[in-house]
Length: 99
Image (cartoon, rainbow, N blue to C red; front, side, top):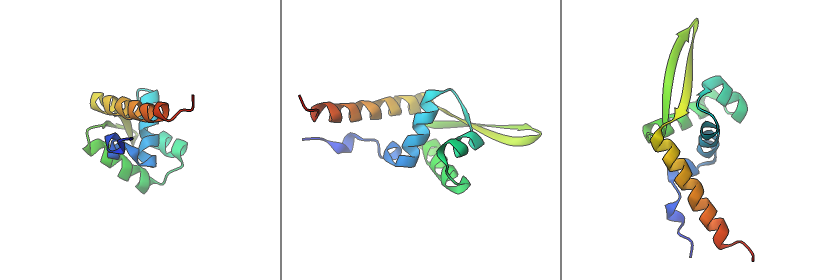
């Protein structure tokens, strides 16, 4: 029997999973780049990023170089949580993979 309760509920939502996947692929993403890549509205993206930040999975850096820019990155805790999430998914797939 599969224990789906092992899946991290913070990451499991598709928008947050997409954000975590992008942040895992490179060191830092600017808000506008995330917004463009994910085709999310400002409000939707901010809400997901706030949830991930509150969980300690994402850090943010604000810069004021003419105009304000916010960049996001995975924290060590976030990277560990993401890798754990992926490992659980892989174990689910491997258990039910046809021989």
